[in-house]
Amino acid sequence: MKTYYFKALPLVAVVAMSCQSVHASTFSLGAAALGSTNLYKGYGNNFYPIPVVDYDGDNFYFHSLVAGYYLWKDQQNQLSLIAGYNPFGFRPKDTDDEQLKRLDKRRGTLMAGVAYNHNAEWGTIRTTFTGDTLDYSNGLVGDVAYLYAFKADKWAVVPGVGVMWNSANQNKYYYGVSGNESRRSGLQSYKPGDSFNPYFELSAKYSFAPQWQAFFTGRYIRLADEVKDSPMVDKSYTGVVMTGITYSF
Image (cartoon, rainbow, N blue to C red):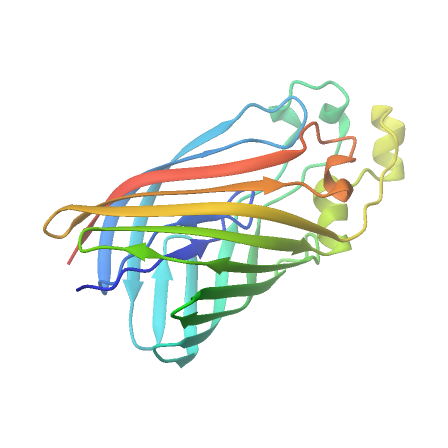
């Protein structure tokens, strides 16, 4: 029986997640639709078309927005260097909130670091640790999750639970309000510390024809007080879902 597995793709609110389901073939192409709730006041929910490009070789892999180089790879353990684009950001012109319109822009960035997976009969432990490489936030993000796969010949379902850690610099850049911004906008100045955001995720895949697969993946994140107490934020949670199809070569 062919083995199926799933990997996480750091995207929007995952900002850490964007989650993407991946299969065991070496190379596949496809298309997906991504939807996410937005944390910032005056922002609507987001929907994006996403090309799916997946390659997994002996030393190097590429999964849409993230690339990695294996330092260690066997059946149970995979340790790799990773780099991926995190498009999460804030543009004052995109909000309907008049006070937020007076704040500074927050940019997406290139995150790089390490990833480690351990696979066993009792499930998978998945970890990543990345940092901002473009000197925008100088922030760090860590993620650890436990997943267990239910598999059959044509389908797989993988639920998981985890927690995402954001450093104080990461939270300050994306959710903080400086003294200058406070004076311009009338919002209270805000300087958050680091945070731990627990989440639940679910991935599913079905092979509906030879070489064709449909997939769904989603993550629900409960926001820590350091994030939801920001004057920029009006939610206590966020979520990302993505669904699409791929063709394996």
